[in-house]
Length: 258
Ligand code: CO8
Image 1 (spheres, rainbow, N blue to C red):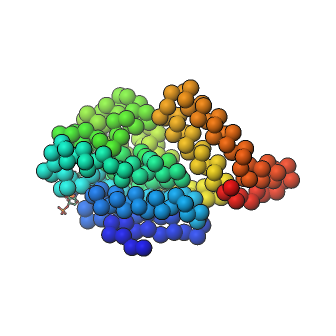
Image 2: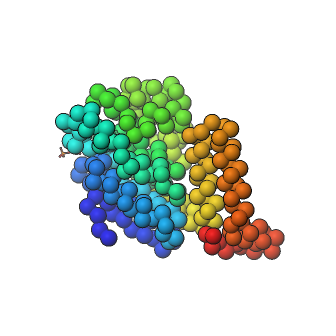
Image 3: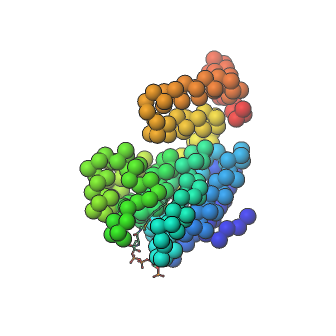
C-alpha cells in the first residue's frame, strides 16, 4: 500500500519502519499525515509480523510541529474538531512498542509525538522543544502533561513558557531519550532495539507497556492493581509456560505469542 505522507516498510526481522515524508515542510504534521499514521498503526495491531515500530522523519526534521498553515484561520470550534480526534492519539493507543528515531528538529506536536513513543533515539544535532508559546498558544497534544513527568517542573516550565529547546546531551540527561548518536547511526540504533523487542514474548511486551503507562496515568493503587491483573493474565499464556520450561531445560524459549 502506498501513502501520500508516509513511507512504510515491513522488515522481516519482525518490525516496521514508518517515515514521515514531507521533508520540504520539515514534516509538519498535517491532518492527512496523522490519519495515515493512525491507519498504518491500526493495521499493525493484528499483524504478527510486526512486533515493534520504528517511527522516523528526515535528516533535518523528525517533525516541526502541527502544520501551522492548516490551523491559520481556525476558530475554537474548528480547533476542537481538528485536534480532539483519534489520529492525534494513534501512538498512545498503540499496543506494541514504538521507538522514535529522531534527527534534527522535533518541535511542538513533533516532540509531543516523540513523548508518546516508548523509547527514543536522538541524533547528536537534535533540537527538542515546545515553541507553541511563540505562536500565542500552548502545546495541545499532551505536552503540558507529559513533559513535567519526564523532565520535572522547572525545566518543563522553561520549555513551555519560554520556548527553551534541548540538545542531545540535555535530552539524555533529563530523560527524554534513551540514546544519542551520530545522525547516520540513529535509524540503525532504533532498529536494533526493535529487533531485540521482536525476539521477546509478544504478550509480555504488550502488557509490560500497558503497565508502565498505567504507572504514568493512574494512581499507585490503580497502577498496582493493573499490574496484578496483567501479571496474572500472563500465567494463562502458552508463552509463560514455555518461558519457565525453557529455563528449567536450559534452552532458548520459542515464543508463539499465545
Ligand atoms: N507548519 C507548517 N509549515 C512548516 C512548519 C510547521 N510547523 N515548520 C516549518 N514549516 C515549513 C516552512 O513554512 C517552510 O516552508 P516554505 O519553504 O514553503 O516556506 C519549510 O517548512 C522550511 O521551514 P523554514 O524555511 O522556516 O526553515 P528554517 O530552517 O528557516 O526554520 C524552524 C526552521 C525554526 C523550525 C521554522 O520552520 C519554525 O519555526 N517552524 C515552526 C515551528 C513551530 O512553531 N512548531 C509548533 C507548531 S504548533 C504545534 O505543533 C501545536 C501542536 C498542537 C497539537 C494539538 C493536538 C491535539
